Image (spheres, rainbow over the protein chains, first blue to last red):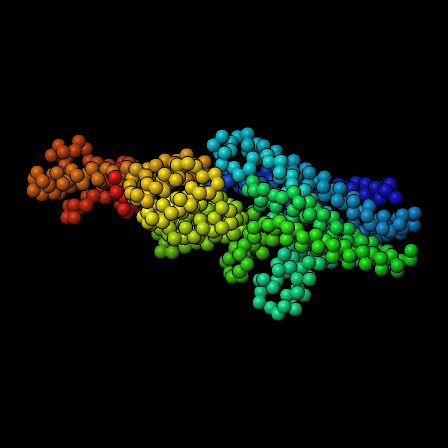
Length: 272
Length: 296
């Protein structure tokens, strides 16, 4: 079973790294991380903070673009190319096919995130090397702060969750454009999920309405849950290990839920 | 298992898992306090609205707004528009709402807001408001100290200044010299010696912009010292000759002074022969002098 899932995942990884879209986005991301040095020069102090913010935002944005544009085609492309018939004829349960696809794309995304993180650390090391001691003392956290990896880990968890969502939409929609729209729509709704969860605190509405909206807010994938830690780490503030662990646990459980839903739909789907 | 049963089982699993995920998130939010990056108010041009618009990129947006604040200040300082500096506070407020830990935006932002006309908006009230927001979001001794400094230097309310220095001294990490400073301010507020001491402390700040502002303010104190000496010379001239000089050159011709006195930036002082008042030349780059600064 593990071997079959691994085989599908490896196939997805090999196929994805050949995708020109991936190179375009990764190249753009590395350039943007490098350009953050120039942006840092324009600011009055805190250039290291700005390079870190811009670098982390670039990693997240590029990761989201990669996930959406590759993730939505994971299953629908197989259907479009008719290669799904050959795959389903093989002794490969449908759920293993879905899980393999997911693992393969998550691997691709993680490799890219690692490459972008390395580029960011290189930029920060270069800035730190050229800085005066008095400037270093003014930084809220060291330039090559290893705690940045916590922020990167949470971005990776967010992207793993988004991959599961994209895969879910990919299983029932044969139109790539529709899948992109649905995934991006749910991503934006998820970024606003915190406001929906506390809707009653923000807007004066009847209790029943507030409860209904809050229920929707708690049911949506909470992409907003991953962003707070970035600010804290960049500003050298402490972050509780339990907070990070629970956020990672949330991503793991919700991703499993989305994959289970994808398996449920895919197992009933008929191909003609 | 048939396809129908698999679908049903996965549907049930999905519902249970989404519920479990929501429970984990709720437990996390209840168990760990992360300061809200925004007040829960909805109005236009507010940080809250911006926070929603920028989704998870609020830290980067804060950087952009900080750059805009600096650019706005620089542009307005050289402008002669009546509404200049109007956007400075909203921009700083947005920056610090998007990133409540943006230390330099509070500290340097407060200095920019407090600087008197014509070099700044002359709004110590807004400077204090910004620093109070900093204390609320991220308590550190520098913010109450800066509020004390704004009271000392800009509003000349020495009782308030001493109260804020006391508060700063009581906060974790505050240096030893703040507590005596509070006592001196309370006893003899407005003396140049204490002002010099505070400015010299700011000279050791790690932020270049705070150091530059302190250097400029020290030059202002030098100018006030020179004006005091010139006033004494004028009084002596009047006592000896029964009249005041028509211009400062007359003091040089009478060999009372060796040369026409200049301010620390090299601009000659302005002298009004009618009121006999000495002040900075309108073209001087020092800016407005502190209003009530005793020579003690």
